View 1 (cartoon, rainbow, N blue to C red):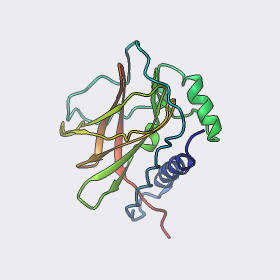
View 2 (view 1 turned 120 degrees about the horizontal axis):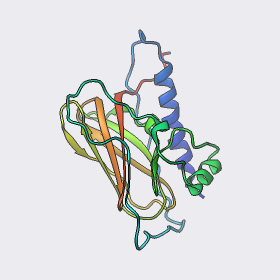
View 3 (view 1 turned 90 degrees about the horizontal axis):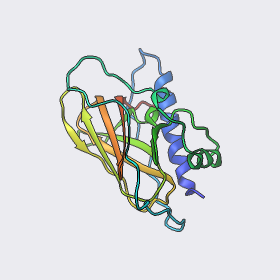
Length: 202
């Protein structure tokens, strides 16, 4: 069973995405506080990494920086359906598989990974929900498609697998970024146009 705070964390991300999408264009946005990352559940067993895995690469090929408009990845571009274990976990959370993007044992929810939260140090914190099919370290990297700047992300250890995995990256600026997650030989890439997270006007 997923840790109880996972549902609240994902719910906060979804709510933030909905609020930003529904905010009128002439409203004065105010930066929102980033939702707290849940503490990993240590009492649930994890599925160890398989002794051999087939390499899976999903998502757009790397593009040269400054090539024009931001080619945001759409979930419909995923070449495969989420695996049964992910769909079962989503059902336990009262959610469906709409919006998930990935392949093999690694999936992400790009729609909630487009809101940057100011960290007070001049950077923007991007929260990215992931799902891992087996227990192996998740590596995250972001590349700006405007400047070419590369930033390594973070994925705290201790989350049971198969299951939810928190992750994120602290970006030096907003705009168009290609996010890459790697779990063993599996690589998932997607492009997001990061904008400031907004609160609902009073």
